Length: 217
Image 1 (spheres, rainbow, N blue to C red):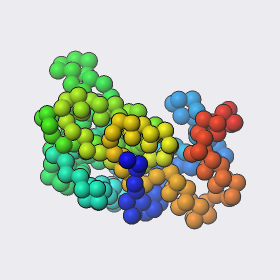
Image 2: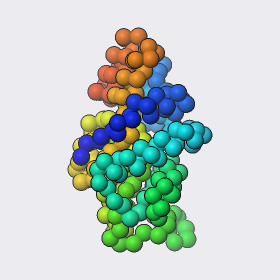
Image 3: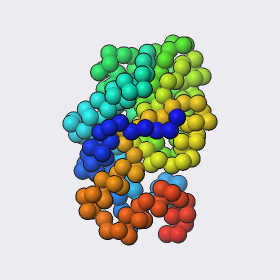
Image 4: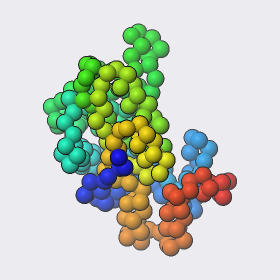
């Protein structure tokens, strides 16, 4: 159930770098919300401003569905960044769409899932970024609680952490992504953007993100 990029993963990685949706800075690490330092910052919301890129993402998701013989009844998106991509995919496939909040609303009907979802329906969940997988799997749990069968999670980009792959495996839900951190680093290396030392730093972070951060704190 490990993630499996589609054939055009290098093109999309180059796209994300070109539009600054992903920024690599091994010599000037970013501080994430967790407090850890990382050589990468990802904001896939920037894809919304680029019609050609978002079409490639949509078409990539269609290719993933076909490659893995997934036939959903409903497309779901995670709030908030997964919502627009889920909407474009649902429109392309002429399917209903829902979205999943991180937690139920505090008022009204107190919904966590917005839209119409019937028990027994087959769902594919769209996510923009896979880090540890925690938020995606919480959305999977909410969909299952509502009686849906979650066929898979499809993501735009994954850091490729082994812990995330293990979490999806344990949850019994396949994860498929359009591109990944290792591919991103390969594309940057071929472009000559970084020297050998910087590339080594980028590659070592994925293997031990905690140790990498502690060494630079």
